[in-house]
Image 1 (spheres, one colour):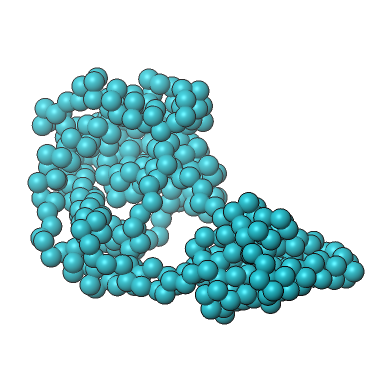
Image 2 (cartoon, rainbow, N blue to C red; image 1 turned 135 degrees about the vertical axis):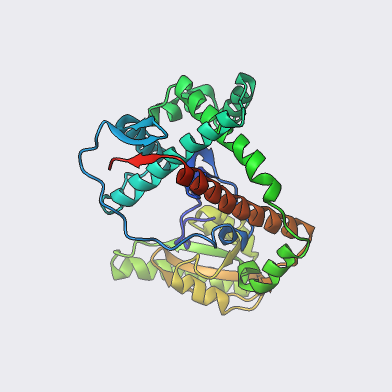
Length: 352
């Protein structure tokens, strides 16, 4: 998308979010795949409302928790917090410290409970399984150097990553045995979710438009602005007389879209700056705008296609995606219940 009329930055790659046994996100260094509209909320609908959080002391004790006698140290918690910050690329906001520290500690406790449950079930993870998972992570980076840099940012050595991966695989084996057989959907559940949540599956009204931009600094003096407007007006007159829009855009437009004849592809409302959006959405297909002033300069806009808002059809692909997300939500719900049951029958001591 061009940088001129667009007030919405390009999508940034985000850390991959994998469901943890506590129902919270455990972040890993990977990109998150795009989701189908509507499905991004489905899995989280059952999340409980936030409750008041007990303050976490500024100075942590050497041991922050014990799980059936097994210690979770201050270093374990602080490294997990650092890993989370490194994965997200953001420092922990001061006002979120209590909530995040307790949430991360709950994750560490959950993994320890599941590790102990795996031992009681005689479930193990082979070195080959660990290496396969690590290799999958490694392939998400352009080269080995980038992979090692990501580990360094998380204060992880390759051995640390293998240990963390083994812990996650062990937990997943417990869930596969104890939870997955209970995760099932009837044939109508996806269709019912689709029917009851139509707003989640609507594609917005979209335009496809081309534009020619004559740039001018918003702080420029009036004579400079007037000269730019005159240039834009002259180009519009040429278009009215039959000049080819794409050819003029390639020759005269001062926007990144010039090389593609000014084509901006499809965009919904809310993506472009307001004066540009208002002018574009007021046009019929094939119609030229008047000269439009925005903070970027002066534009001539031509709408080349229009798509009305529509409900996505419930085809096999969408149904499959809805089922997948509903199953993920159900699996997370049952995983939380399992951890709660293990915690209730065990001895979990928290020292912060």
